[in-house]
Length: 255
Image (cartoon, rainbow, N blue to C red):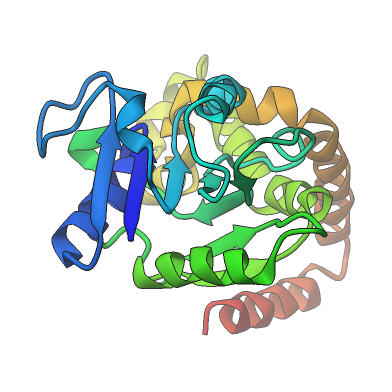
């Protein structure tokens, strides 16, 4: 197949490098900043692609999809990799659009930090519309599996609620924990591996983080309310039993 990748940051660059190195498909990269692998700035090079991955920042994804709408064939399958799915799922396009989101990444961003193995063992959510052809879904899933990911199918609404719980709120909490000690020199001096590990997500790409918070604020605030309830529960006289239960749950989650 001929596969296009628009935007070669951490996610797009890793998709591009994986497909390029596997040599099973032809891959076309579109980027304003990457000057390797015959990557181009010309979107017209995407004509004739079977699948196109849009991996640009979330705040310009709709703009890029609109641009592709006037370039791509009607049979081209297009997916985005935004960490939110409701806002991209409300429009119709001439091409075949299947929103998706790879649950993979690091605290770094950019082409120089991308690597082919990023998606190995990762979960990749897809949120197809009800009228999406199953053959198109299977075609996209084939490439995602070749990247090394396992697929979870859900709806845009449920996806956005879930990522608020496991991704967006943890990032916000990591940032808030750092703010907690901005004026406490002793806490800064004592901070060690536990604080470092807990606040790793505070290093997240701020442009991406801003998009997450602005577009998923309601779900994040609901998650914070739930978090407060669970903190109060853990601070009760029954802490030890609750903590032991959480340890078992956490171990089972990653076993």
